[in-house]
Image 1: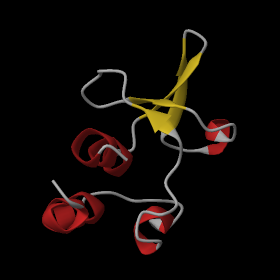
Image 2 (image 1 turned 90 degrees about the vertical axis):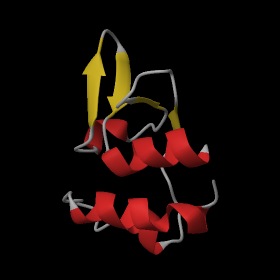
Image 3 (image 1 turned 30 degrees about the vertical axis):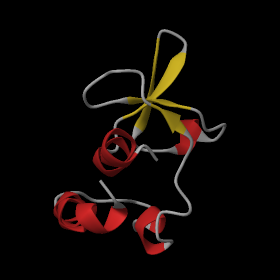
Image 4 (image 1 turned 180 degrees about the horizontal axis):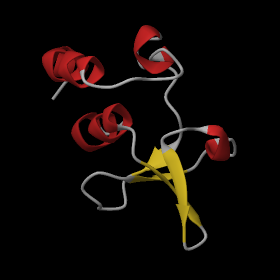
Length: 81
C-alpha cells in the first residue's frame, strides 16, 4: 500500500483523535515521524525516541517505552514507516 492509497484511512484516524502536536507528522508529509519499532503487538509499537517520556502516547512497561498513537501504529503496520 502507498501513502496515497492510505489517505482515506489516515483522515479517518486523524478525525477520531486529538494530537497535542497538531499532527506535525501529517503536516510534514510524514517526513517527520517518531522512531518506533513494530514488535508484533496489535495496537502498540516500541518507542525508540529519546524524548519518548514527553509524549502523551508513550508509556513505560517493564523497562521499555511503548507508543499507542493510533496514527503512528497505522503508519508502521500498514506503510512500514
